[in-house]
Amino acid sequence: MLFAVLAIAATFLPKAMASGFDASAATNLAVYWGQGADQGRLSQVCQQASNDIIALAFLHIFPDQGAGGYPGTNFGNACGPGYFTTPNGTESQLLSGCADIAQDIALCQSLGKKILLSIGGATPPTSMINDDTSAVKFADFVWGAFGPKRHDWTGPRPFGDAAVDGFDFDIEHNGPGGYAAMITRLRRLYQTDLSKRYYISGAPQCVIPDAQLSDAIKRSWFDFIFVQWYNTESCSARAYINGANRQIFDDWVQVVETSFNPNAKIFIGLPADSTTAVWNPTFYLNPTEVATVVNDFRTKHPRQFGGVMLWEARASDLNPVNGKSFAAACKAILMDQGTQAATLNERDSTETQPASTLPNDPSTNHPPVNNPASTYPSGKRSDGYLYDYSRRARFIKVRRNSPRQ
Image 1 (cartoon, rainbow, N blue to C red):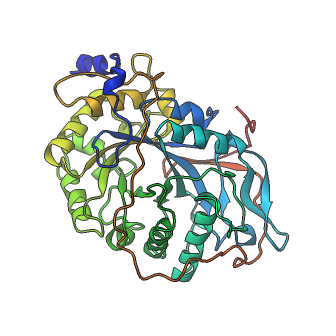
Image 2: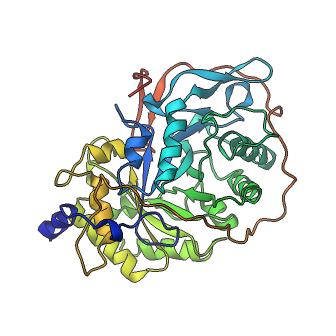
């Protein structure tokens, strides 16, 4: 079986058969980028044809805890020094030197990739929404700062004219407060720009109910659920492979089927290697094991299965399978429908996503859209360090790397 899986990763899929992003498909590969040691540019990740959804990690400081009332961001070595200043003159923790990311987002989107800004990470002291009023203001801020450029927005634009394709919620601490309200507000804001479709994803732990996101999943509209089937041994993919907890996929399907969007796609979240991406090496699955869980899940639950999520891009590149990234091996497994073993050519990343319209938005009871740029109080700046927020896997304080790759 291992030989067969490795053969998948050694084969190239003809260009005409390449499968790019399709929100309704079961072949999407999502990967986080922004916290890998000595990582390359975002454009390098997007030029790998295996990667369909890239989540930028992280917006890790929330406005209620942020300097000057702004949120704060950290993308490892990808941004230069400098932070935005609030209208009252306070230096925030929102990075202002991210021109490379801005440039790369445009390239990624031209290749059909979907770019999500991931909110959260492993930062308990700085990731809390005080109440639903704060949640709405938070949504207004990230939409103005990272959504489509608008004439009525006078606040910061960290990525310039570039706009992300939606937001990911990797919430790991401090309970469920505010997230349903924030996501509902974002859904309302999405309706103000019908030029393209915007998405919401969440990355709950595998434990049911997830202490942070279960309420939001139940009460607000998610498109993708990136379940972290690692970190927690009892419900991990490793436990499934070992013959324990064989109902873990069924349990999450039931969660989604009773949620606000019963058609949300569930992704199998896995670490991309056994060393840098996860604190317990046993949580890592080799390609043979990945094929087992993928085939079991999509065979039993074809309507709910969406693909694979990996933490994270740099770890994937450092864990090659037959000379290609671990992500490429996983994409090959997703592309194998039992009739042909094949994989994508990593140098052929030309697929595009046709324009699509928004689905009927289920969220209607919201205050009017306004400009929240002046609604946040003052505070003080960050300590000048970078953190490796590897989603409960590791939490390491490190000095800033070179701002450019």
